[in-house]
Image (tube, rainbow over all chains, first blue to last red):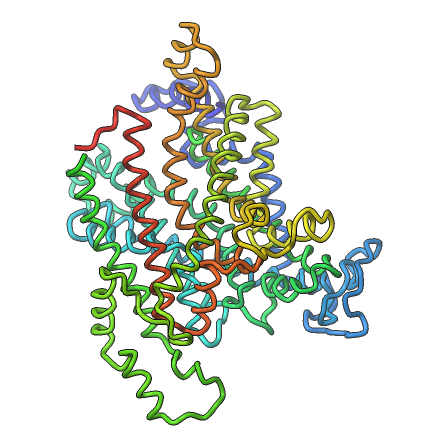
Length: 317
Length: 309
């Protein structure tokens, strides 16, 4: 565990500085004691899992933002003459590379254009859930009493309902399921997990001496919450949220696959897998490639989340 | 112990009412009309629709419908399916054993394979078996269940011809094995990882050193001392996971054409059959709550230091 040695390294630097006796630090690169964040960052930079997953995510983000860089066709350019044509693996990055599907669409082109919706939904849900769940969890944990009772009972109810089931029940009632509808449905169900983690984290932090000190000095509640409690309680929330991101992408694809997520003409890997499933026996490539691309995306975000967790919380390793 | 169970049962009531009310509101307050949906595109006399609705009690105010529903539950009355006229209780009685078999088979696979892989990895932490298990489980976590289902179907049925691609007889455990593996895969990966970290942490504990030092056979050290102490996080996960397994059955049953709770739920959702959906979700929630209580009681068995007053 490199982290332990690292904190020991910085400790002797910290103490003399605090006493006002300037002693030259043992390591000149470390001018002041490193925070959890800079410590985690130096850990992350050396983690192969972090580097690989960041590269994967970067690639996906570029694909999502500029699909035109990777393919000249539009995802709705259909040519029925090419119906279920087999992949031509020599033809890198051309429309025929991964073959054609049952509607004469280029599988490769659909793959590239499907990235945007997946990533947009995954990231938006994570951001929403972190803010809403984080805020409510913080309020429940810090104030306790009836605020806590109300919020905790609500999270109990939502956690009693399996995630996928809840999303299905909500989404089936919508006629048109645009991206934002799916984002809202997943966020409505997902915030409770973050709220619960944040609540637990805030309860341990609020008894810390520095919070007591801030209170004794007459700091306002908002200041205590955002300057003292939040920065020290937010770590487990970030860990949970990054790992959940992959799960949200998976949930969107599953819902689209079931026919209660995105629907054509929207381009989504889940929709493509749904239309490909009846052709499995004769044209497995039509299902395989979107499936692999989806798994690659989920893998990238889960690896990223695990790397962040390992860096922020070495105990969990 | 008795008092603890009673308190837990009482605490379940608000959660139970909350979840059923939530699903009830979502099914009935949102747009869509199950009675109108029965007739598709046919033109139909509004008076006839009103008569059917009055017959089913769908014309009552929402709170009254919910009240009637809640009052029916203790008598085993889950309401009536609109499309078929069958009591929902009967639909459940037919579909539940099928899903229960599938989920139980998946559960056994999760426990045996998951804990087994976790033990191997945990005892070899940092060496190659550990790396292999971590890598394989990462793949299982990343590939969504429906993609995995079709990959299995293509590889094991269409290519290798080991088993039939669809389940034709839900009492045939051999046919259920592949769907059960698909349903189990995600949880299996989590259980393996949880067991791994728990075992890796506990194997250096003092009681382990003592057990080895006093010359106990290795089997006993591993099964009684190490495994039992490492099981608490795993059991917690398994308890929560039962609900996920039941919900995951929606996808798995669809892929393999199994007529269990999952596919009943799925068709009912699309027909906007409020009574069926609420009934099935209620059932899943009851199972989930009962098992989470069971898990908490199991803690005391696994770790005698935990006592419930």
